[in-house]
Image 1 (cartoon, protein in one colour):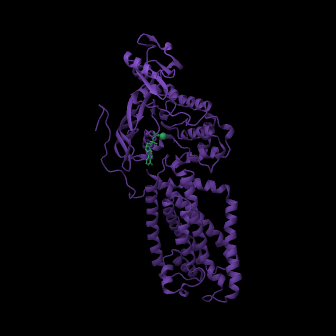
Image 2: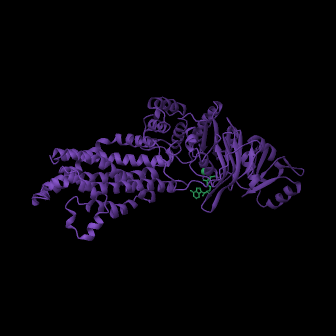
Image 3: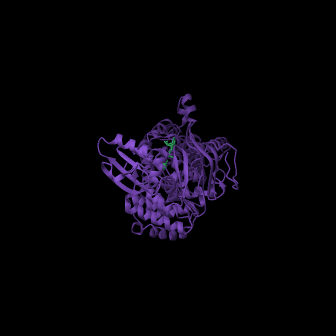
Length: 275
Length: 305
Ligand SMILES: Nc1ncnc2c1ncn2[C@@H]1O[C@H](COP(=O)(O)OP(=O)(O)O)[C@@H](O)[C@H]1O
Ligand SMILES: [Mg+2]
Protein backbone atom coordinates (compact mmCIF):
# COMPACT_ATOMS: atom_id res chain seq x y z
CA UNK A 1 0.00 0.00 0.00
CA UNK A 2 1.35 3.37 -1.01
CA UNK A 3 1.23 6.10 1.60
CA UNK A 4 1.99 9.68 0.73
CA UNK A 5 4.27 11.26 3.30
CA UNK A 6 2.60 13.14 6.10
CA UNK A 7 -0.92 11.96 5.32
CA UNK A 8 -2.48 9.67 7.87
CA UNK A 9 -5.35 7.53 6.73
CA UNK A 10 -7.48 5.22 8.79
CA UNK A 11 -6.90 1.81 7.24
CA UNK A 12 -9.78 -0.49 7.88
CA UNK A 13 -9.11 -4.12 7.27
CA UNK A 14 -12.56 -5.36 8.15
CA UNK A 15 -14.41 -6.89 5.22
CA UNK A 16 -17.02 -4.58 3.69
CA UNK A 17 -20.55 -4.84 5.05
CA UNK A 18 -22.53 -7.66 3.49
CA UNK A 19 -26.23 -7.87 2.91
CA UNK A 20 -26.72 -10.05 5.97
CA UNK A 21 -25.61 -7.25 8.28
CA UNK A 22 -28.15 -6.20 10.91
CA UNK A 23 -30.69 -3.63 9.72
CA UNK A 24 -29.99 -0.21 11.15
CA UNK A 25 -33.01 1.90 10.32
CA UNK A 26 -33.29 5.22 12.10
CA UNK A 27 -36.02 7.76 12.76
CA UNK A 28 -35.08 9.35 9.44
CA UNK A 29 -37.42 6.72 7.96
CA UNK A 30 -40.24 9.12 8.86
CA UNK A 31 -38.98 11.47 6.10
CA UNK A 32 -39.72 8.80 3.52
CA UNK A 33 -43.20 8.44 4.97
CA UNK A 34 -43.59 12.23 4.72
CA UNK A 35 -42.55 12.16 1.07
CA UNK A 36 -45.09 9.48 0.22
CA UNK A 37 -47.76 11.24 2.22
CA UNK A 38 -47.12 14.46 0.32
CA UNK A 39 -47.60 12.67 -3.00
CA UNK A 40 -50.68 10.84 -1.70
CA UNK A 41 -52.22 14.04 -0.37
CA UNK A 42 -52.45 15.37 -3.93
CA UNK A 43 -54.86 12.62 -4.92
CA UNK A 44 -56.38 11.64 -1.60
CA UNK A 45 -59.99 12.26 -2.58
CA UNK A 46 -59.90 9.64 -5.32
CA UNK A 47 -58.07 7.14 -3.15
CA UNK A 48 -60.43 7.51 -0.22
CA UNK A 49 -63.43 7.26 -2.55
CA UNK A 50 -62.08 4.00 -3.96
CA UNK A 51 -61.53 2.67 -0.45
CA UNK A 52 -65.17 3.42 0.39
CA UNK A 53 -66.61 1.81 -2.70
CA UNK A 54 -65.00 -1.61 -2.23
CA UNK A 55 -66.28 -2.41 1.26
CA UNK A 56 -69.74 -1.12 0.46
CA UNK A 57 -69.99 -3.47 -2.51
CA UNK A 58 -68.64 -6.36 -0.47
CA UNK A 59 -71.24 -5.81 2.17
CA UNK A 60 -74.07 -5.35 -0.32
CA UNK A 61 -73.21 -8.29 -2.58
CA UNK A 62 -71.98 -10.84 -0.07
CA UNK A 63 -74.04 -9.73 2.85
CA UNK A 64 -77.40 -8.63 1.58
CA UNK A 65 -77.44 -10.49 -1.74
CA UNK A 66 -75.85 -13.79 -0.78
CA UNK A 67 -76.75 -13.41 2.86
CA UNK A 68 -80.44 -13.59 1.92
CA UNK A 69 -79.98 -17.32 1.34
CA UNK A 70 -78.03 -17.88 4.56
CA UNK A 71 -80.11 -17.42 7.63
CA UNK A 72 -77.50 -17.93 10.31
CA UNK A 73 -73.74 -18.44 10.55
CA UNK A 74 -72.55 -19.65 13.93
CA UNK A 75 -75.54 -17.89 15.41
CA UNK A 76 -75.18 -14.49 13.73
CA UNK A 77 -76.29 -12.99 10.41
CA UNK A 78 -74.03 -13.60 7.41
CA UNK A 79 -73.20 -9.89 7.29
CA UNK A 80 -72.10 -9.93 10.93
CA UNK A 81 -70.08 -13.05 10.21
CA UNK A 82 -68.02 -11.61 7.35
CA UNK A 83 -67.72 -7.97 8.44
CA UNK A 84 -64.76 -8.15 10.92
CA UNK A 85 -62.68 -10.25 8.55
CA UNK A 86 -63.22 -7.88 5.64
CA UNK A 87 -61.32 -5.19 7.53
CA UNK A 88 -58.17 -7.34 7.39
CA UNK A 89 -58.80 -8.53 3.85
CA UNK A 90 -59.06 -5.11 2.26
CA UNK A 91 -56.20 -3.70 4.35
CA UNK A 92 -53.96 -6.52 3.17
CA UNK A 93 -54.78 -5.88 -0.50
CA UNK A 94 -54.07 -2.15 -0.13
CA UNK A 95 -50.71 -2.74 1.55
CA UNK A 96 -49.79 -5.34 -1.04
CA UNK A 97 -50.52 -2.94 -3.93
CA UNK A 98 -48.62 -0.08 -2.30
CA UNK A 99 -45.49 -2.06 -1.49
CA UNK A 100 -45.34 -3.90 -4.80
CA UNK A 101 -46.53 -1.60 -7.61
CA UNK A 102 -45.96 1.60 -5.63
CA UNK A 103 -42.56 0.73 -4.23
CA UNK A 104 -41.39 -0.83 -7.50
CA UNK A 105 -42.26 2.36 -9.36
CA UNK A 106 -40.38 4.49 -6.86
CA UNK A 107 -37.39 2.15 -6.79
CA UNK A 108 -36.99 1.09 -10.40
CA UNK A 109 -38.86 3.52 -12.62
CA UNK A 110 -38.44 6.84 -10.83
CA UNK A 111 -35.12 6.08 -9.07
CA UNK A 112 -36.48 7.79 -5.98
CA UNK A 113 -34.64 5.45 -3.59
CA UNK A 114 -31.37 6.21 -5.33
CA UNK A 115 -31.93 9.94 -4.92
CA UNK A 116 -32.78 9.53 -1.24
CA UNK A 117 -29.72 7.47 -0.33
CA UNK A 118 -27.44 10.28 -1.48
CA UNK A 119 -28.76 12.14 1.60
CA UNK A 120 -28.13 11.09 5.23
CA UNK A 121 -30.76 8.35 4.84
CA UNK A 122 -29.66 4.75 4.38
CA UNK A 123 -31.40 1.99 2.44
CA UNK A 124 -32.64 0.62 5.76
CA UNK A 125 -34.27 3.97 6.46
CA UNK A 126 -35.90 4.00 3.04
CA UNK A 127 -37.29 0.49 3.44
CA UNK A 128 -38.47 1.18 6.98
CA UNK A 129 -40.18 4.30 5.60
CA UNK A 130 -41.86 2.27 2.86
CA UNK A 131 -43.08 -0.28 5.42
CA UNK A 132 -44.39 2.55 7.59
CA UNK A 133 -46.13 4.10 4.61
CA UNK A 134 -47.68 0.86 3.35
CA UNK A 135 -48.93 0.15 6.86
CA UNK A 136 -50.44 3.62 7.09
CA UNK A 137 -52.37 3.13 3.89
CA UNK A 138 -53.58 -0.23 5.18
CA UNK A 139 -54.70 1.47 8.36
CA UNK A 140 -56.57 4.10 6.38
CA UNK A 141 -58.38 1.46 4.33
CA UNK A 142 -59.19 -0.46 7.49
CA UNK A 143 -60.53 2.68 9.17
CA UNK A 144 -62.83 3.36 6.24
CA UNK A 145 -64.29 -0.13 6.08
CA UNK A 146 -64.54 -0.12 9.87
CA UNK A 147 -66.62 3.04 9.62
CA UNK A 148 -68.87 1.52 6.94
CA UNK A 149 -69.41 -1.61 9.03
CA UNK A 150 -70.20 0.50 12.08
CA UNK A 151 -72.70 2.49 10.03
CA UNK A 152 -74.32 -0.78 8.92
CA UNK A 153 -74.70 -1.46 12.64
CA UNK A 154 -72.70 -4.69 12.54
CA UNK A 155 -70.40 -4.14 15.52
CA UNK A 156 -71.61 -5.34 18.87
CA UNK A 157 -68.70 -5.02 21.27
CA UNK A 158 -66.29 -2.20 22.17
CA UNK A 159 -63.51 -4.80 21.95
CA UNK A 160 -63.57 -4.40 18.15
CA UNK A 161 -61.39 -1.30 18.69
CA UNK A 162 -58.55 -3.81 19.18
CA UNK A 163 -58.80 -4.50 15.46
CA UNK A 164 -56.63 -1.42 14.83
CA UNK A 165 -53.42 -2.59 16.52
CA UNK A 166 -53.96 -5.91 14.77
CA UNK A 167 -54.23 -4.13 11.41
CA UNK A 168 -50.92 -2.41 12.16
CA UNK A 169 -49.31 -5.79 12.77
CA UNK A 170 -50.86 -7.19 9.59
CA UNK A 171 -49.76 -4.07 7.69
CA UNK A 172 -46.12 -4.31 8.75
CA UNK A 173 -46.08 -8.00 7.86
CA UNK A 174 -47.73 -7.57 4.46
CA UNK A 175 -45.55 -4.55 3.63
CA UNK A 176 -42.40 -6.51 4.50
CA UNK A 177 -43.44 -9.56 2.47
CA UNK A 178 -44.39 -7.36 -0.48
CA UNK A 179 -41.04 -5.54 -0.35
CA UNK A 180 -39.25 -8.89 -0.30
CA UNK A 181 -41.04 -9.72 -3.56
CA UNK A 182 -40.26 -6.26 -4.93
CA UNK A 183 -36.58 -6.78 -4.12
CA UNK A 184 -36.57 -9.69 -6.58
CA UNK A 185 -38.81 -8.10 -9.21
CA UNK A 186 -37.39 -7.10 -12.56
CA UNK A 187 -40.77 -6.09 -14.01
CA UNK A 188 -44.29 -5.44 -12.77
CA UNK A 189 -45.25 -8.96 -13.91
CA UNK A 190 -43.48 -10.42 -10.89
CA UNK A 191 -46.29 -9.10 -8.76
CA UNK A 192 -48.72 -11.45 -10.52
CA UNK A 193 -46.93 -14.49 -9.13
CA UNK A 194 -46.99 -13.06 -5.64
CA UNK A 195 -50.67 -12.25 -5.98
CA UNK A 196 -51.59 -15.64 -7.39
CA UNK A 197 -49.45 -17.72 -5.07
CA UNK A 198 -49.74 -15.79 -1.83
CA UNK A 199 -52.06 -12.82 -1.55
CA UNK A 200 -55.15 -14.36 -3.20
CA UNK A 201 -54.93 -17.68 -1.28
CA UNK A 202 -54.20 -15.80 1.94
CA UNK A 203 -57.34 -13.74 1.35
CA UNK A 204 -59.79 -16.38 0.18
CA UNK A 205 -58.64 -19.23 2.43
CA UNK A 206 -58.55 -17.16 5.60
CA UNK A 207 -62.08 -18.06 6.60
CA UNK A 208 -63.51 -14.63 5.85
CA UNK A 209 -66.53 -16.00 4.00
CA UNK A 210 -67.29 -19.24 5.82
CA UNK A 211 -65.86 -21.31 8.68
CA UNK A 212 -62.62 -23.13 7.87
CA UNK A 213 -64.12 -26.35 9.23
CA UNK A 214 -65.95 -26.67 5.89
CA UNK A 215 -62.59 -27.28 4.17
CA UNK A 216 -61.07 -30.75 3.85
CA UNK A 217 -58.28 -31.16 6.45
CA UNK A 218 -55.41 -30.66 3.97
CA UNK A 219 -56.85 -27.35 2.84
CA UNK A 220 -57.31 -26.31 6.45
CA UNK A 221 -53.59 -26.83 7.01
CA UNK A 222 -52.82 -24.59 4.07
CA UNK A 223 -55.32 -22.02 5.31
CA UNK A 224 -53.40 -21.79 8.58
CA UNK A 225 -50.38 -20.53 6.63
CA UNK A 226 -52.31 -17.36 5.86
CA UNK A 227 -51.48 -14.60 8.34
CA UNK A 228 -55.06 -13.46 7.93
CA UNK A 229 -56.58 -16.66 9.28
CA UNK A 230 -55.86 -16.01 12.97
CA UNK A 231 -56.66 -12.32 12.55
CA UNK A 232 -60.09 -13.03 11.08
CA UNK A 233 -60.81 -15.51 13.84
CA UNK A 234 -59.71 -13.10 16.57
CA UNK A 235 -61.66 -10.19 15.08
CA UNK A 236 -64.81 -12.28 14.92
CA UNK A 237 -64.38 -13.26 18.57
CA UNK A 238 -63.74 -9.64 19.58
CA UNK A 239 -67.02 -8.62 17.96
CA UNK A 240 -68.77 -11.24 20.08
CA UNK A 241 -67.19 -9.65 23.15
CA UNK A 242 -64.69 -12.46 23.65
CA UNK A 243 -61.06 -11.79 24.66
CA UNK A 244 -59.36 -15.08 25.42
CA UNK A 245 -56.02 -16.73 26.05
CA UNK A 246 -56.06 -18.75 22.79
CA UNK A 247 -55.47 -15.48 20.92
CA UNK A 248 -52.01 -15.11 22.39
CA UNK A 249 -50.28 -18.00 20.62
CA UNK A 250 -51.09 -16.96 17.05
CA UNK A 251 -50.30 -13.33 17.87
CA UNK A 252 -46.82 -14.14 19.19
CA UNK A 253 -46.30 -16.26 16.11
CA UNK A 254 -47.33 -13.35 13.86
CA UNK A 255 -45.03 -10.97 15.75
CA UNK A 256 -42.05 -13.24 15.19
CA UNK A 257 -42.85 -13.74 11.49
CA UNK A 258 -43.27 -9.98 11.11
CA UNK A 259 -39.91 -9.20 12.70
CA UNK A 260 -38.15 -11.76 10.51
CA UNK A 261 -39.89 -10.45 7.37
CA UNK A 262 -38.96 -6.85 8.12
CA UNK A 263 -35.36 -7.90 8.64
CA UNK A 264 -35.36 -9.86 5.38
CA UNK A 265 -36.97 -7.02 3.43
CA UNK A 266 -34.19 -4.63 4.46
CA UNK A 267 -31.43 -7.16 3.83
CA UNK A 268 -32.73 -8.21 0.43
CA UNK A 269 -33.24 -4.62 -0.64
CA UNK A 270 -29.63 -3.86 0.28
CA UNK A 271 -28.57 -6.87 -1.76
CA UNK A 272 -30.52 -5.50 -4.69
CA UNK A 273 -29.60 -1.83 -4.43
CA UNK A 274 -25.98 -1.81 -3.26
CA UNK A 275 -23.68 -2.36 -6.22
CA UNK B 1 -7.95 16.81 2.88
CA UNK B 2 -11.53 16.77 1.61
CA UNK B 3 -11.30 13.52 -0.35
CA UNK B 4 -8.44 11.06 -0.12
CA UNK B 5 -8.28 7.81 -2.04
CA UNK B 6 -5.46 5.33 -1.69
CA UNK B 7 -5.03 2.25 -3.81
CA UNK B 8 -8.78 2.35 -4.25
CA UNK B 9 -10.25 -0.55 -6.19
CA UNK B 10 -13.74 -1.62 -7.14
CA UNK B 11 -14.79 -4.94 -8.57
CA UNK B 12 -18.15 -5.86 -10.02
CA UNK B 13 -18.05 -9.62 -9.64
CA UNK B 14 -14.72 -10.58 -11.13
CA UNK B 15 -14.29 -7.44 -13.24
CA UNK B 16 -12.09 -4.79 -11.72
CA UNK B 17 -13.35 -1.45 -12.99
CA UNK B 18 -11.36 0.82 -10.67
CA UNK B 19 -7.85 -0.51 -10.39
CA UNK B 20 -5.89 0.98 -7.52
CA UNK B 21 -6.28 4.73 -7.92
CA UNK B 22 -4.66 7.38 -5.71
CA UNK B 23 -5.84 10.96 -5.56
CA UNK B 24 -6.80 13.68 -3.14
CA UNK B 25 -8.95 16.79 -3.24
CA UNK B 26 -7.87 19.84 -1.29
CA UNK B 27 -10.23 22.27 0.46
CA UNK B 28 -11.63 24.87 -1.91
CA UNK B 29 -10.34 23.38 -5.12
CA UNK B 30 -12.17 22.11 -8.14
CA UNK B 31 -10.96 18.66 -9.09
CA UNK B 32 -11.97 17.11 -12.40
CA UNK B 33 -11.92 13.44 -13.32
CA UNK B 34 -11.71 13.06 -17.08
CA UNK B 35 -11.75 10.00 -19.24
CA UNK B 36 -13.58 8.11 -21.94
CA UNK B 37 -16.82 6.18 -21.36
CA UNK B 38 -16.26 3.16 -19.17
CA UNK B 39 -13.09 4.56 -17.58
CA UNK B 40 -14.57 4.16 -14.10
CA UNK B 41 -15.44 7.80 -13.37
CA UNK B 42 -19.03 7.21 -12.26
CA UNK B 43 -17.99 4.25 -10.14
CA UNK B 44 -15.42 6.46 -8.40
CA UNK B 45 -17.97 9.21 -7.81
CA UNK B 46 -20.47 6.72 -6.39
CA UNK B 47 -17.86 5.47 -3.96
CA UNK B 48 -17.22 9.05 -2.85
CA UNK B 49 -20.88 9.71 -2.12
CA UNK B 50 -21.19 6.42 -0.24
CA UNK B 51 -23.61 4.81 -2.69
CA UNK B 52 -21.22 2.04 -3.66
CA UNK B 53 -18.88 0.19 -1.30
CA UNK B 54 -15.28 -0.13 -2.49
CA UNK B 55 -13.50 -3.46 -2.77
CA UNK B 56 -10.09 -2.64 -1.35
CA UNK B 57 -7.82 0.28 -0.53
CA UNK B 58 -8.96 3.25 1.51
CA UNK B 59 -11.26 6.19 0.91
CA UNK B 60 -11.96 9.07 3.24
CA UNK B 61 -14.18 12.11 2.78
CA UNK B 62 -13.75 14.96 5.29
CA UNK B 63 -11.20 12.61 6.90
CA UNK B 64 -14.01 10.17 7.69
CA UNK B 65 -14.01 6.58 6.45
CA UNK B 66 -16.82 6.17 3.90
CA UNK B 67 -17.63 2.73 5.30
CA UNK B 68 -17.93 3.82 8.91
CA UNK B 69 -19.54 7.25 8.67
CA UNK B 70 -21.71 7.46 5.56
CA UNK B 71 -24.44 9.47 7.31
CA UNK B 72 -22.08 12.14 8.59
CA UNK B 73 -20.37 12.39 5.22
CA UNK B 74 -23.58 12.55 3.21
CA UNK B 75 -24.97 15.25 5.47
CA UNK B 76 -22.20 17.57 4.21
CA UNK B 77 -22.28 16.53 0.53
CA UNK B 78 -24.16 17.80 -2.49
CA UNK B 79 -24.61 15.21 -5.22
CA UNK B 80 -25.47 15.54 -8.89
CA UNK B 81 -25.70 11.96 -10.17
CA UNK B 82 -24.98 11.04 -13.77
CA UNK B 83 -28.60 10.07 -14.43
CA UNK B 84 -31.41 12.41 -13.51
CA UNK B 85 -33.42 11.14 -10.57
CA UNK B 86 -35.75 14.00 -9.77
CA UNK B 87 -38.97 13.09 -8.02
CA UNK B 88 -41.52 13.05 -10.85
CA UNK B 89 -44.40 12.79 -8.37
CA UNK B 90 -43.54 16.23 -7.03
CA UNK B 91 -43.56 19.69 -8.53
CA UNK B 92 -40.38 21.69 -9.07
CA UNK B 93 -40.24 23.48 -5.72
CA UNK B 94 -41.56 20.44 -3.86
CA UNK B 95 -38.56 18.50 -5.13
CA UNK B 96 -36.30 20.91 -3.26
CA UNK B 97 -38.41 21.13 -0.12
CA UNK B 98 -38.80 17.36 0.17
CA UNK B 99 -35.09 16.86 -0.39
CA UNK B 100 -34.34 19.40 2.34
CA UNK B 101 -36.44 17.33 4.72
CA UNK B 102 -34.12 14.36 4.17
CA UNK B 103 -31.38 16.55 5.65
CA UNK B 104 -33.57 17.44 8.61
CA UNK B 105 -34.04 21.05 7.48
CA UNK B 106 -37.26 22.49 8.91
CA UNK B 107 -40.21 23.26 6.64
CA UNK B 108 -39.98 27.06 6.70
CA UNK B 109 -36.21 27.07 6.23
CA UNK B 110 -36.60 24.54 3.39
CA UNK B 111 -39.08 26.79 1.61
CA UNK B 112 -36.79 29.79 2.03
CA UNK B 113 -33.77 27.94 0.64
CA UNK B 114 -35.78 26.36 -2.18
CA UNK B 115 -36.95 29.77 -3.42
CA UNK B 116 -33.41 31.19 -3.30
CA UNK B 117 -31.96 28.21 -5.13
CA UNK B 118 -34.59 28.37 -7.88
CA UNK B 119 -33.49 31.96 -8.42
CA UNK B 120 -29.85 30.86 -8.40
CA UNK B 121 -30.36 28.35 -11.23
CA UNK B 122 -32.83 30.65 -12.99
CA UNK B 123 -35.85 28.40 -12.67
CA UNK B 124 -38.02 30.79 -10.69
CA UNK B 125 -40.59 30.82 -13.53
CA UNK B 126 -40.95 27.06 -13.20
CA UNK B 127 -41.56 26.96 -9.44
CA UNK B 128 -44.91 25.19 -9.63
CA UNK B 129 -44.40 23.25 -12.86
CA UNK B 130 -44.71 19.49 -12.94
CA UNK B 131 -41.18 18.09 -12.94
CA UNK B 132 -41.53 15.69 -15.92
CA UNK B 133 -42.42 18.62 -18.18
CA UNK B 134 -39.02 20.31 -17.72
CA UNK B 135 -36.46 20.21 -20.54
CA UNK B 136 -33.21 18.29 -20.07
CA UNK B 137 -31.27 21.45 -19.26
CA UNK B 138 -33.82 22.58 -16.71
CA UNK B 139 -33.80 19.17 -15.02
CA UNK B 140 -30.03 19.31 -14.72
CA UNK B 141 -30.23 22.80 -13.22
CA UNK B 142 -32.92 21.68 -10.79
CA UNK B 143 -30.70 18.78 -9.70
CA UNK B 144 -27.86 21.24 -9.18
CA UNK B 145 -30.17 23.36 -7.04
CA UNK B 146 -31.24 20.24 -5.14
CA UNK B 147 -27.61 19.35 -4.45
CA UNK B 148 -27.12 22.75 -2.81
CA UNK B 149 -30.10 22.59 -0.44
CA UNK B 150 -27.99 21.49 2.56
CA UNK B 151 -25.23 24.09 1.94
CA UNK B 152 -22.72 21.33 1.17
CA UNK B 153 -19.00 21.67 1.81
CA UNK B 154 -18.26 19.31 -1.06
CA UNK B 155 -20.10 19.06 -4.36
CA UNK B 156 -19.87 15.78 -6.25
CA UNK B 157 -20.97 16.33 -9.84
CA UNK B 158 -21.09 13.46 -12.33
CA UNK B 159 -21.29 14.97 -15.80
CA UNK B 160 -23.30 17.99 -14.72
CA UNK B 161 -23.58 19.36 -18.27
CA UNK B 162 -23.76 16.31 -20.51
CA UNK B 163 -26.62 16.52 -22.95
CA UNK B 164 -27.19 20.25 -22.46
CA UNK B 165 -27.21 22.84 -25.22
CA UNK B 166 -24.25 25.28 -25.19
CA UNK B 167 -26.23 28.02 -23.52
CA UNK B 168 -27.42 25.81 -20.65
CA UNK B 169 -23.89 24.44 -20.32
CA UNK B 170 -22.43 27.91 -19.98
CA UNK B 171 -24.99 28.77 -17.31
CA UNK B 172 -24.08 25.68 -15.25
CA UNK B 173 -20.33 26.32 -15.49
CA UNK B 174 -20.88 29.93 -14.50
CA UNK B 175 -22.80 28.76 -11.42
CA UNK B 176 -20.07 26.29 -10.52
CA UNK B 177 -17.44 28.99 -10.73
CA UNK B 178 -19.41 31.23 -8.42
CA UNK B 179 -19.84 28.33 -5.96
CA UNK B 180 -16.12 27.72 -6.03
CA UNK B 181 -15.47 31.39 -5.34
CA UNK B 182 -17.67 31.15 -2.28
CA UNK B 183 -15.49 28.34 -0.95
CA UNK B 184 -17.25 25.13 -1.99
CA UNK B 185 -14.94 22.24 -2.87
CA UNK B 186 -15.93 20.50 -6.09
CA UNK B 187 -15.21 17.08 -7.60
CA UNK B 188 -16.62 16.60 -11.07
CA UNK B 189 -16.46 14.46 -14.15
CA UNK B 190 -17.07 15.86 -17.60
CA UNK B 191 -16.77 15.15 -21.28
CA UNK B 192 -16.15 18.78 -22.14
CA UNK B 193 -12.42 19.41 -22.15
CA UNK B 194 -12.60 23.14 -22.81
CA UNK B 195 -14.86 23.52 -19.79
CA UNK B 196 -12.65 21.36 -17.60
CA UNK B 197 -9.63 23.47 -18.54
CA UNK B 198 -11.43 26.62 -17.51
CA UNK B 199 -13.04 25.45 -14.27
CA UNK B 200 -10.73 22.82 -12.77
CA UNK B 201 -7.67 23.63 -10.69
CA UNK B 202 -6.49 20.09 -11.13
CA UNK B 203 -7.60 17.18 -13.25
CA UNK B 204 -7.02 13.45 -13.13
CA UNK B 205 -7.05 11.66 -16.44
CA UNK B 206 -8.54 8.23 -16.12
CA UNK B 207 -8.53 5.31 -18.54
CA UNK B 208 -9.42 1.64 -18.04
CA UNK B 209 -9.83 2.06 -14.29
CA UNK B 210 -6.48 3.77 -13.72
CA UNK B 211 -5.46 7.38 -13.23
CA UNK B 212 -2.72 7.98 -15.77
CA UNK B 213 -1.97 11.60 -14.97
CA UNK B 214 -2.88 14.28 -12.42
CA UNK B 215 -2.15 17.97 -12.46
CA UNK B 216 -3.15 21.47 -13.47
CA UNK B 217 -4.78 21.18 -16.90
CA UNK B 218 -3.04 24.14 -18.52
CA UNK B 219 0.39 23.14 -17.19
CA UNK B 220 -0.07 19.51 -18.18
CA UNK B 221 -0.96 20.41 -21.72
CA UNK B 222 1.87 22.93 -21.92
CA UNK B 223 4.48 20.52 -20.62
CA UNK B 224 3.43 17.38 -22.39
CA UNK B 225 1.87 18.57 -25.63
CA UNK B 226 3.03 22.14 -26.18
CA UNK B 227 0.93 25.13 -26.97
CA UNK B 228 -0.37 24.29 -30.41
CA UNK B 229 -1.75 21.49 -32.48
CA UNK B 230 -2.12 21.16 -36.23
CA UNK B 231 -4.96 19.06 -37.52
CA UNK B 232 -4.10 17.96 -40.99
CA UNK B 233 -5.92 15.84 -43.51
CA UNK B 234 -3.40 15.13 -46.26
CA UNK B 235 -4.21 15.17 -49.95
CA UNK B 236 -5.26 11.72 -51.21
CA UNK B 237 -2.38 9.33 -51.74
CA UNK B 238 0.19 11.33 -49.81
CA UNK B 239 -0.17 9.49 -46.46
CA UNK B 240 2.93 7.35 -46.90
CA UNK B 241 5.13 10.28 -47.73
CA UNK B 242 3.82 12.30 -44.78
CA UNK B 243 4.36 9.42 -42.33
CA UNK B 244 7.94 9.14 -43.48
CA UNK B 245 8.62 12.86 -43.26
CA UNK B 246 7.15 13.14 -39.78
CA UNK B 247 9.14 10.20 -38.42
CA UNK B 248 12.37 11.42 -39.99
CA UNK B 249 11.93 14.87 -38.50
CA UNK B 250 11.09 13.34 -35.10
CA UNK B 251 7.84 15.28 -34.85
CA UNK B 252 5.21 13.98 -32.43
CA UNK B 253 1.93 13.10 -34.12
CA UNK B 254 -1.10 10.87 -33.93
CA UNK B 255 -3.25 9.59 -36.69
CA UNK B 256 -6.94 9.03 -36.15
CA UNK B 257 -8.84 7.97 -39.25
CA UNK B 258 -7.88 10.39 -42.00
CA UNK B 259 -6.67 13.09 -39.65
CA UNK B 260 -3.14 13.72 -38.41
CA UNK B 261 -2.74 15.56 -35.10
CA UNK B 262 0.73 17.12 -35.18
CA UNK B 263 2.29 18.61 -32.05
CA UNK B 264 4.40 21.33 -31.62
CA UNK B 265 6.35 23.33 -34.18
CA UNK B 266 5.14 24.52 -37.52
CA UNK B 267 7.92 22.93 -39.55
CA UNK B 268 8.56 19.35 -40.57
CA UNK B 269 12.23 18.94 -41.31
CA UNK B 270 12.55 22.22 -43.11
CA UNK B 271 9.12 22.18 -44.77
CA UNK B 272 6.49 24.58 -43.64
CA UNK B 273 3.46 22.62 -42.50
CA UNK B 274 1.25 24.77 -44.71
CA UNK B 275 3.18 23.50 -47.74
CA UNK B 276 2.21 19.86 -47.10
CA UNK B 277 -0.38 18.96 -49.72
CA UNK B 278 -3.68 18.77 -47.83
CA UNK B 279 -7.44 18.67 -48.03
CA UNK B 280 -7.86 20.30 -44.64
CA UNK B 281 -5.50 22.04 -42.24
CA UNK B 282 -6.33 23.64 -38.90
CA UNK B 283 -3.97 25.40 -36.53
CA UNK B 284 -5.29 25.59 -33.02
CA UNK B 285 -4.41 25.77 -29.34
CA UNK B 286 -3.44 22.37 -27.88
CA UNK B 287 -6.02 21.01 -25.42
CA UNK B 288 -6.50 18.26 -22.85
CA UNK B 289 -8.05 16.30 -25.66
CA UNK B 290 -4.68 16.27 -27.44
CA UNK B 291 -2.94 15.31 -24.25
CA UNK B 292 -5.19 12.33 -23.86
CA UNK B 293 -4.69 11.35 -27.47
CA UNK B 294 -0.95 11.55 -27.01
CA UNK B 295 -1.00 9.47 -23.84
CA UNK B 296 -3.32 6.71 -24.96
CA UNK B 297 -3.66 6.99 -28.72
CA UNK B 298 -7.42 7.23 -28.13
CA UNK B 299 -9.96 9.98 -28.45
CA UNK B 300 -11.18 11.15 -25.09
CA UNK B 301 -14.66 12.12 -26.16
CA UNK B 302 -16.89 10.59 -28.68
CA UNK B 303 -18.75 13.76 -29.40
CA UNK B 304 -22.29 13.83 -30.75
CA UNK B 305 -23.06 10.29 -29.78
N1 LIG C 1 -23.42 -2.12 -11.61
C1 LIG C 1 -22.46 -2.54 -12.45
N2 LIG C 1 -22.26 -3.86 -12.64
C2 LIG C 1 -21.31 -4.29 -13.49
N3 LIG C 1 -20.48 -3.50 -14.18
C3 LIG C 1 -20.63 -2.17 -14.03
C4 LIG C 1 -21.62 -1.62 -13.16
N4 LIG C 1 -21.53 -0.27 -13.22
C5 LIG C 1 -20.54 0.00 -14.07
N5 LIG C 1 -19.99 -1.12 -14.57
C6 LIG C 1 -18.86 -1.21 -15.51
O1 LIG C 1 -17.77 -0.53 -14.96
C7 LIG C 1 -17.05 0.17 -15.94
C8 LIG C 1 -16.89 1.62 -15.54
O2 LIG C 1 -18.16 2.23 -15.58
P1 LIG C 1 -18.38 3.74 -15.15
O3 LIG C 1 -17.80 3.96 -13.80
O4 LIG C 1 -19.82 4.04 -15.32
O5 LIG C 1 -17.51 4.52 -16.22
P2 LIG C 1 -17.58 6.04 -16.69
O6 LIG C 1 -18.43 6.80 -15.76
O7 LIG C 1 -16.17 6.49 -16.70
O8 LIG C 1 -18.16 6.02 -18.08
C9 LIG C 1 -17.81 -0.02 -17.24
O9 LIG C 1 -17.16 -1.02 -17.99
C10 LIG C 1 -19.17 -0.47 -16.81
O10 LIG C 1 -19.73 -1.34 -17.75
MG1 LIG D 1 -20.10 7.91 -16.10
